[in-house]
Image (cartoon, rainbow, N blue to C red):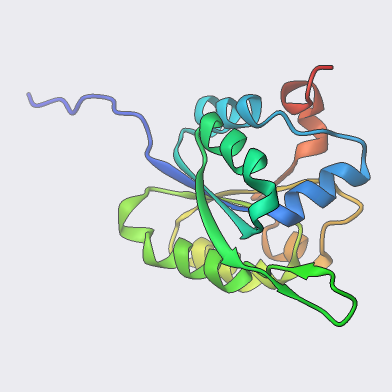
Length: 167
């Protein structure tokens, strides 16, 4: 009898960096990137974690920390609004990344609270490719995203002790 070896899952995470940062900041969590990456690897079998973020040269220390923790950075050009506020919308880039890499992973972990990702989540569910959506916090999570991901959504605030920066 041929027995297939029990191999670990090869899941990928697609992270909306700004949404993650702001969502956790709102509830007083300072993310420990290393601990979060370990959580993704150990609990969700994430082999590759793509962190989508706007590129600003003055944030090089942040980018270095993310890379050291094991994240693969996906930069978006940052534009500025009339008031000079930086804007690096990663929604399309993250969606294209998740869809184009579908043959390379078993299931996706989407990290965001943004309702703009409801279509992606729906598509991943239809194709049996969604492991879970990780929303930074309940209060800021889009109703549309919650409804679409029903049964496939968890909240990072529930694992605060595993991901919060120990000071």
